[in-house]
Every structure is written in structure tokens, then in C-alpha cells.
Length: 336
Picture 1 (cartoon, rainbow, N blue to C red):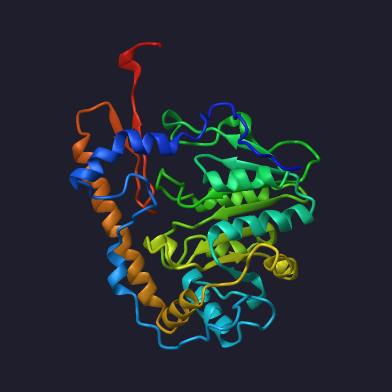
Picture 2: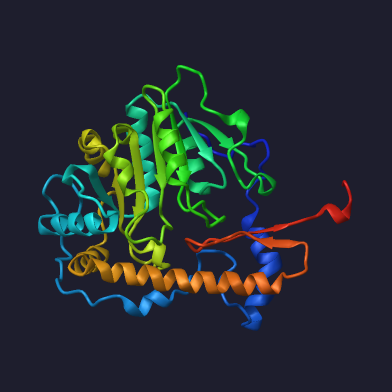
């Protein structure tokens, strides 16, 4: 089933982002008084950009670099070494698949989960809009779990594990996207223990700036066999020109991930692959870059806190990642 327009979701307004960006931020851009890009992604300015190591190994530009079998050759071994350092735990080489972006990673994951019988995805909100639309285009049922500042953005009690026979995937972000705080490790363990037969948990970690990762040890548990995590190479650094991402998945899903790669444009950009292989030789340099990027974001969030002091505006924590948000209290305007 294909859907040509966005569905109307309870609690959520239609996407009017472009109109808001043009109406409220265009004049600010023209003045040049912008410390960061209100659009969130068009012109990300990252202090980590100057820290990228020069590539040591040039790759041929006349071929595809697709993570099928041994097609990546030594490059795949380098990526494996990088991920082991990044995760902070040993990682089975069959437990990851590389692809061009986290967006492609989520699409691949949904396609494979559909093959495994999953027919519904439960999104913890806030969530990346693209993941929701991908699920709808694939004909999957989508459930959006609302969360509110007054409840510290906890999952509402009435959105507990559904007691149905329909296989589902719980789709979360770490850090919580636009909120900027981390998922609690114990909460993730509880979620995974409560999964019904056929269910999966997916954690999108595109913006996670922690090194080593806080959630790597989740794969060592029995319920880790139904956990899928998505990571971006340049994304958490604010270096979006790098087109490389990783799907960390159970080893049994490797063949199906590979089977979907060609269909969903799985070839990796050679320049991005060169950069990752270079960093793999000095993986802790990636950790230093993450730290610099995180410090930059936290400093900007502190500046935002000072700007709104005394106003009916609260900036969300933003201790990890670089997509932030603010809550405006409109109660003074009345019930309407």
C-alpha cells in the first residue's frame, strides 16, 4: 500500500516547517546575527570539521562500494575495528551492515522487519519525520506515542506494551531527538525484556556524541537478539557531507540486510569510506571529535538558556546531539 500524502495524526500538526522557517527566520539570516542554523540541518557549523584526519588510502572511483559479502575488502575490516572501539565491546563481524546514511539505514531496517513479519511500528516521539513517512510508504501501521514536558517526556502509562498478536517494532532515538537527553540504560533493558515474540526494538543513534557508546552492552544480553541500532559516521559531528552509516543488528539478519542493499541504493560514497578507514586507525580521535562537537552544542544551549531567562520559554536539556528545541508556555494567552 502506497500513501501519497501525510496522514493526519492525533496530537500532531501537519508539517509546516518550511513556512515557519521562511516566516520567522529569513530576516535573521539576512542580518548575519545567527549563531546556529534554525533549520537544524541546512547549514550546520561544526567545530569538529577542522579535526578530520587527511585520508591515507585513496579508493578507486570507477567502482561501487557496497557492503555485500567481501566486496569492501580491507575497508570492511577497518570499519569493524572502528565499530568495536566505538561500541566499547567486541562486535561479531556479521552484526553490522554499512550503508550511505541513517535514512537509508532506517529504510533497510523497515524492509527487513517487514520480511520478518513486523506490521506495526510504535514511534516514541519526538521522532525523525522521515522514519514515520518511510513506515507509512511501506504500508506499515504507525503508532505515535505522545510525550509532554510536564511528564518529563516519559512514555504515557496507557502506551504500555500492546497485548496483540501483531508483531511490532518499537522505534526510539538516543539521545531523544530535539530533546537532547540520553535514554536510560535500564529503561532500554526493561523494554527489551518485555518484547513479545516476533517484536523488535530499534534505536536510532544518528546524533549520539558519546564515545564509547552507552548502549553497546545491550547486544550482549539474550534479548539483544531482537535489537537493531542505527549509527551515523559524520552525523553526530555535524559533518553531514559524510555519507556513511551503520546498522547494528543480530547476525541472523545480515543476509537479509545485504539482500536489500541494491534495491535501496546501498552503495557507499568512496570519500566517506576513505575518511572512516583513516579514523579507524586512530579510533579515539573520533572520540575527541565527538567531545569537541558536544562542547560546542552545550555552549550554544547555555547561551540560549541565558537569552530566554525570565521568559515563558524553556530550552530542552540538549546534553547530547545537536538538534534542540524550546517549549513556549502559552497559558497567559488564555484557554483559546
